[in-house]
Length: 59
Figure 1 (cartoon, rainbow, N blue to C red):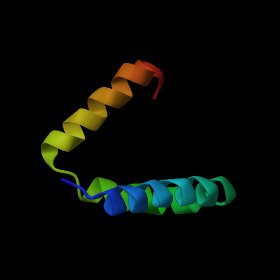
Figure 2 (figure 1 turned 90 degrees about the vertical axis):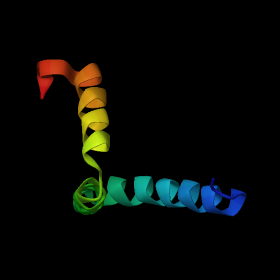
Figure 3 (figure 1 turned 30 degrees about the vertical axis):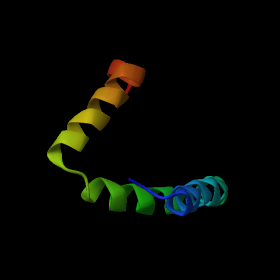
């Protein structure tokens, strides 16, 4: 379980990344590539399902 401080740090990094990504899309690509490379197969399946639910065949 995460502590309040750990949750706050994650919220702060999310907020900062939204600002940075708005300024430079390449940062988003780097962050996404890094995070996706760390996913388990089950997590990949979950993200694929989430994407398909929202975008279907549009991608």
